[in-house]
Length: 170
Image (cartoon, rainbow, N blue to C red; front, side, top):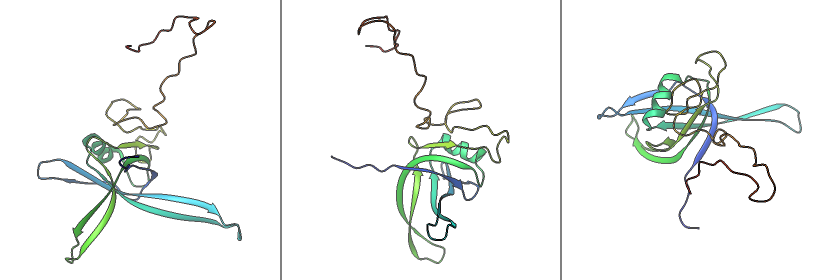
C-alpha cells in the first residue's frame, strides 16, 4: 500500500470553553481541550475505575470555527474528525517545546455536537456543518448520518422485473 493516513476520530467532552484568536489577516483559530474518559469495573475489587486522556484541538476551518465559537461550551460532548499535527514552539521562559494537536484544517475535518448543554437547553442534538436550521450539518454529516434515506427494493420478478426510478446519471 502506497502512502499513509493521518486521521483522528474522537468523541469526548470539552475541558474548557473554546478560545478564539485571530491571525493578522483576520482568520479565526479556535482551540479547546477535549477529555475522553474510559470507565471500567476493577475485576479484583469491583470498584469503578476511570482514566481520562486529554487532546488539544485546533480548528482552522472557518465554518466549524464559527460553530465552535458560538455554541460549544465546557462540558459539551462532541464528535470530531481531524489530523494529528506536531509543532515546535518557544514557551514563556524561552524553552523549546513540542506539542501534538488534533487539527481540523480549512477544507477538512468534521465537528458534530452530540448534546446541547449550555446551548438551547431543550435536549435537541446539533450536527456541526454549513447549513441552517435546527439540525444543520456543518462540514459533512457524521458517519451515522451519511446513510441517507433508504428506498425499498423494487418489486417484481427477475432482475428486470420492475421499473427503477433512480436519479443516477448513467
